[in-house]
Amino acid sequence: MKTIIHPTYLPNVAHFVAMMNADELVFEVCDNYQKQTYRNRASIYGANGKLDLNIPVVYSQKNRQLYKDVKIFNTENWQAQHLKSLESAYRTSPFFEFYIDDLMPLFTSEADTIMDYNFTCLELIFECLQLPFEYKITEEFEREPKHVIDARLLANSRKEIPQKFKLYAQVFDNKHKFLNNLSILDVLFNEGPNTELYLKSQTFDL
Image (cartoon, rainbow, N blue to C red; front, side, top):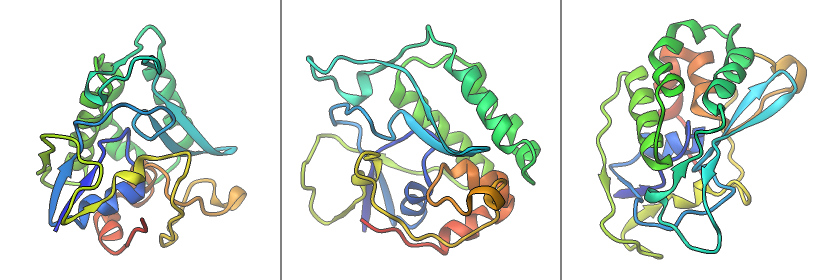
């Protein structure tokens, strides 16, 4: 069955479990942009607990914009800030040095629109996982698509659906215990080549 999902920034574990378990992966590209979602936000495990990384965007609530048309506000030096936060959070993790060079283009090449940037994120992460990145995109927006697994709700950070993923070792879990459903980078930097097996062994809730 098809799984329809939003392309999000450094997607969380639930997003990746949905993508890995999809018979056919379809990305929603015809929707209106919504604030306070994982379209421009990712959560990582910092020294003080959960830390949100937000990409600033040029967006006005008065005039609805399609997600694919929303531009990144590049006047702010957000890429350097996000890289610094990732280094601080994961430099002592087992596989940070193994993957960070492959991910560096995300923080050194200027991006134009948030959707294009998120697809670049996905491409690089799938490369790190050594997995093919095969997908289709929607041709029109359907509020209630039929005969698909509709995983678009996973992008909603305000009403996040609780997930119950298996524990794995995290850098600061001795201080704040296990934090569930963070960015895929948390798994990648801590689990390395085992990430694929971990993701395929999980199920997600909608």
